[in-house]
Image (cartoon, rainbow, N blue to C red; front, side):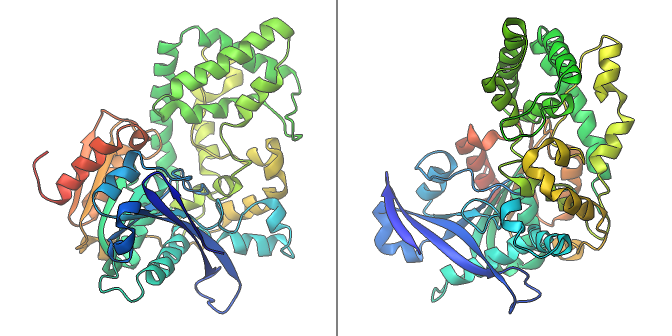
Length: 440
């Protein structure tokens, strides 16, 4: 049921759309896709005529981070520009039809689960967007809309430019020009280089954590620590908190987690419930399992991922924590990566282990980008590329920028990957100036 309510200065419409699970079988099963439509309360009478901009969230597998909505940050910027804003919970996330082992166990076999999960990549997300765009613009003279793509949302926006460019007015991409590769191998080669630098910078800021982290890892290697939901807090799982290394504020959040955990070991000889939960919540694979299952597949076009990050990790000896312990060296954190053992250590992922293996072995992924069409692109596109981005490689992003005709790119070392949470006005003002061919 669609509902509406008011938050300060905004009328919110909550909309549920019934979309085909598989757009190659439109008469088959359907799923629900949820979106919030935000219209300035002062313009509610003309809301149906306001231009529309749709926000595509980072991920994959995460619901819209701007929900619940408020009149702040980038939302306010675009509402003040005269837009109505669409906040999409991409298929499988948030209030859209959920992906978790509880929902998937209704399917008759693992093969059915795998085929189901294959319908949740960027191409299907874009098809959902087209379905929603057509519904929202029905009866309007102007049936196009614009996009904001943050991180993986930028990957989706680039797929959109490949599939339905005639549906778009303009596109903003923030930290999300996708690597145009056939598998993730080049991505992780670049990622580990950046991750090495971020680890060194972290220990430069918090040198006391070198000993603290070594002691925490030593404890986890020598003790079995269970999480409240019967998962296992292994040393390797602990090191995944390094996913925060590339975010504004990430170093400080990690330090607080490490400081508390180390304090627990010194005071009570084990990890407290609070410390275990602090560690378990980063990364959030258990609340958003779609991320873990599909993460490497977002880079695949006609090739298999074959646990790419895990294969690359084997080559990166500076990340081997047992070796670091034995040689009395700093233990390096891992980053935005999913490994086969995640489906053993994380309780909520265990039922999906065999399906994850099948996804990692899948070779027949359709193309996500039409390089020929992108080379002839006529849609105004502006992108910010962060030189120190730990998640979307700078050099691979520039290759994509060159491949998209007319893409205006702002390259900066001032910000990190999540900058639109903190500097949205500055970023979107300058990207808009690029699109409008203004000085900034």
